Length: 267
Image 1: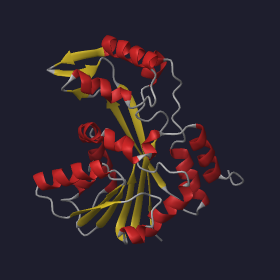
Image 2: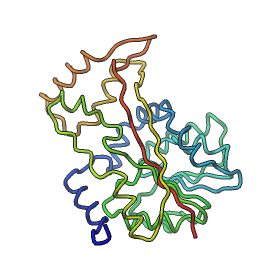
Image 3: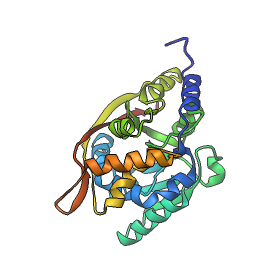
Image 4: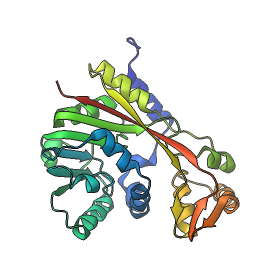
């Protein structure tokens, strides 16, 4: 471990397993469905129990999406600066803040790779990267997050398959290629001299959707550049496994999804 270059190993894994999630247009295209899904999973509640927010904190939520954490954090901290590269995600967050009369969330459109100072970011008591470190240079971007925080930093990332459905991949005939998981983050932090604590969020997921098409779309995002043949296989798979219960559509099986929460205090 001492001799391995974990940041380079991350780069190489990212090259082998490219993800559409690094493109703003990917999130623009599924912004509303993702925001609805994220709000229903209970993920935010699990994270906040680990975070134990304080009312005097200013918080940076880097890669905030539609406000999965920014919205529930708003009434628990002094302020939230919510940053995302997807204009449509920020529009959803802005809409929700208006609906809920939330006035302590500032929204900034920026990327990890941008100059944060020029984008209007400063320093905050706490910095969070919740399932958003989809970058090529992991070390450089962790360093940016680390220096943006005065007191504490949180990174949340996948464990193993993460939210991906291995059964659906088998049905489509496509190898599940998830890419690097939390152990790369942990080892890069270690080589940076940061000794992070690790907590895990474990969920049994069986999502419910109001419409059949929405349920189908909940798996389609896992298959970028899907061929017509793969689409037919996925449709057939969903026809076999989608059931209607209590007026909602859901898969007839649950999956275990794990997230790693890596966090540390500034010294």
